[in-house]
Length: 198
Image 1 (tube, rainbow, N blue to C red):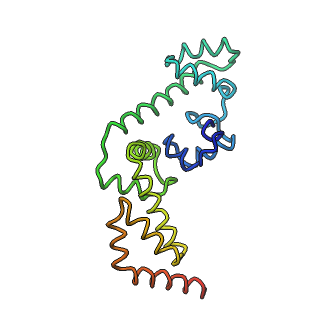
Image 2 (image 1 turned 90 degrees about the vertical axis):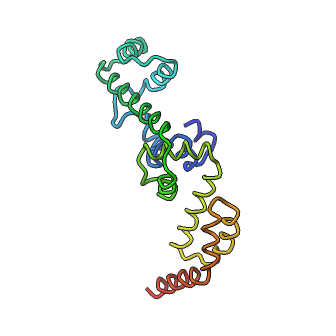
Image 3 (image 1 turned 180 degrees about the horizontal axis):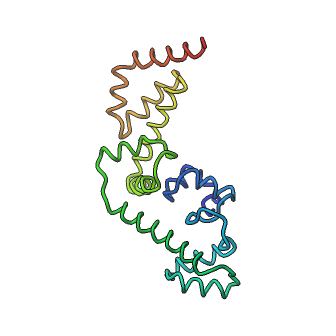
């Protein structure tokens, strides 16, 4: 919510937090307030306090429950224990995922897969990689814009795209497009003509 308040785009929030686009959208719209639970619970009114305690180092469910009771929490120990278990698992998965260095092939696959189609673990991996190698962010955005350009038959965007892509990490791909530019352009125009005829 702090990032939303700073007018950071949803796409960037997804990249920074490692959460899915759907979850980030729900949180930004106020439809969801906690990423570690899946249904409405008695914890809702106490999530800020609970997060602060967790961040302060209190990770024991029973201790958190006692502290919450001092804040007027009426729920059971079980509710708090389930929350701590989910949060602990999420952090463990994140840490394990970040310690494993993926292969170049895996990184390529993740970079070219739509964010909404990635698992939470894959989203966390990509966020960590992009944070350490910012040029990959540009490369991913160029790949996405190429896919959009082909899908929407935006023939006029081809030359500007090639000029930008040639100077990026996907320069060799752009060189291939330059070599086959006539064929790529013809395929896009043919698609556009078929669409118009329908």
